Length: 440
Image (tube, rainbow, N blue to C red; front, side, top):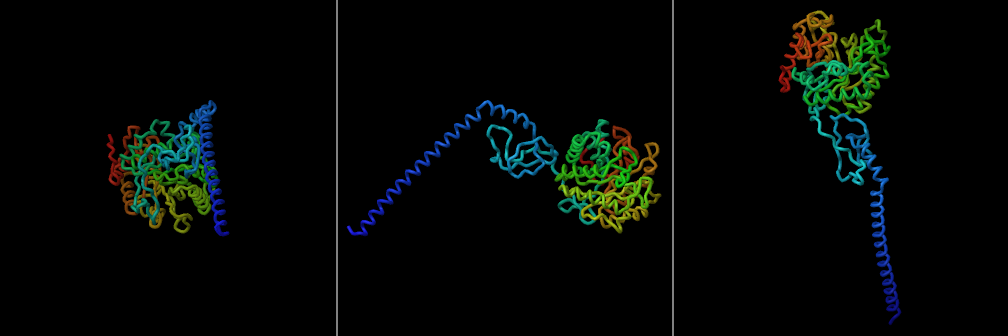
């Protein structure tokens, strides 16, 4: 045997021994893993069947059993425990992979958002394009609808129900406006009032109607002086209201509009409710819009002019510094003398040539049906108003679907229309049909 042969034989022997040792070590590791698996399984069985685990499981299950919604944070597959917090039923949360659910013990811990019961089909989102409102596919939409009375009042009257909304749709409405009075907001409390709004939004969506939420105060928000205690609020409360609405209805396309303040009574030079210049009013409104959009809402802010939300002349030279908004006027018959149209064009109608305009309150009724000095006139006003709005593409909601509030379009809770109610019901049905609803 040569020296090279001896070296080769020695090397082979060493490699053989090394290979055997490696195989033995691998076998030992495999056995060890099996023993650990068996041990872990045994421990899991003991844990899951122990009295303490069963008690803990039952407690957690009872806490979370009735929870069908999750925390406000967006679900992204990370583990969370279902919590009792509300999300509007019209905003279902989609589940992700079923395989992500943790089945151990059924304690309500999972890694996916739970699937909620299906609500009505979402309405197409509305946005601003030039001087018009359009749906997400670019279709122009002009709104014709009704103002409800405060949901709190309707609840107390026993009228906050689906039938009320069916009447509105049967009259030809494609939108309804909810006037939220600050005192009613406080009386109900935030959680209860949001439940009322959620019900209304749900009924509106089921019937194919959009919603305006209106912070229904009348006065000078800068000075915090108001025309009646029911309208009393503060800038802080107003800002917080819109923060709440923006977060709560984020992504809900039925709630298409936020009317940031119902009627500023302001006039240039001040009045008995104090002083607020247009630039000061702009500053307040622009901050509200920042709050709304900063909290994720895509609802369109609606901004009223001065003189009880009638006068938009300041917009010609100093518009609100925000894109994608609409302007509001409340041109009741008593604001100007017939034939109106020339004054309307000068006072607020010109704005519609550049921006969307929404008349969120208007209408008429005669003295026998509860005329207020601002509401009186007849079908002459109706013809002038509807013709002007049709010509300029201006949207409107008629005040109000309640027999107790001046400007009413119904005489009673049988929904018998007033003279003005008959007029605008006919006009809206001509524009939007009845939604298949038969009215008695």
